[in-house]
Image (cartoon, rainbow, N blue to C red; front, side, top):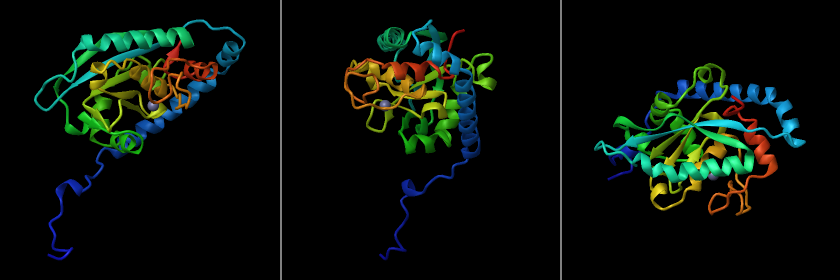
Length: 240
Ligand SMILES: [Zn+2]
């Protein structure tokens, strides 16, 4: 059989990105919201850098997907430990209070599409955000009254998925208003992963210092003063 005669593997046929225009538009709008919010937050940066550190808030909702059979990927009580660890780290290290956006943990009513159950990170996540998975996540991303249009106090939605490549979770930083978290993370007692991904959503990047939260693997929980300034200046973190 010549190369030309070989049947094409259907898995290798790239699906058209039907949802790309909407996904790219949303990413662009999110960048704009983030930029404007950070500019308005400049006086706050100066205050924090000279020791004025009143508590700020970040609103979080955890959304658990169902697999093809309709089985939830996690039970709500499994989220508790990760939530507590995240709340302690943000309060202690950045003076940011984690506020549950009620209902704080929900299980979606219907099976999720396979594209949203098994996702990737970095370039793969960016491509998926512009396609079926991104459309699904945007449908269930949490908003407050003002956040959808202004970005102010925009909640971070944590989608509990089945796999994230071969890692524990992923965030596209300020491009999206959600992060993904592998459900298995709740069972292997790795509670800091949720805080790490929400840190990315607030524009924190990786470090090579194992004692810090933004070290990709390990028990580190420390957030530096500069990271705290960056996090507190995010559109997700506000006084009200
Ligand atoms: Zn990371």
